[in-house]
Length: 203
Image (cartoon, rainbow, N blue to C red; front, side, top):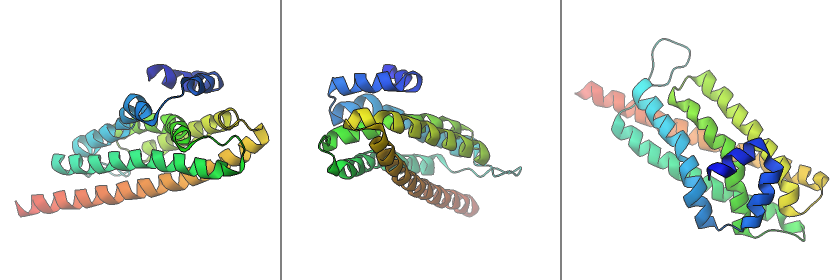
């Protein structure tokens, strides 16, 4: 797992070739890559929201309780895991017009690896200042887009021009999914924050 993470960041084209040679299964991808790396934003957000609290430029920070943090963390984790499978299924669907169309499991594996920078950018949520987390998210999206552009042609066996079109579409849809995911997380966090405030009020 660690070797692929470093390779995708340091030399993505060569690493994609290595990944393609492995013929990895979805279960192996999840147990050795996705389950571990997707825990980074979940654990970081849990620590940030329960120990420090979100700050939006003011002096006060809004925290949530440990119980709420655990519940929201589990939901957040499940949403991330589902998002990887969803993006992989979309890549499989969009690649339908190419003769070298990979299987759905291969597309999900591809999606799991291109999400690596996004997983790592979640580390900044451990001290959740809104502008810092936003910058980290933007950087993660840029790195994910770079991996997508580099990996799509070799992964699908198509030209770089075709790969550019497909990867641009995939990135656009992926960003939409990311926005929905972030909106869901913010909504769930807000509900947890409100419930914690109400609990403290009634005590």
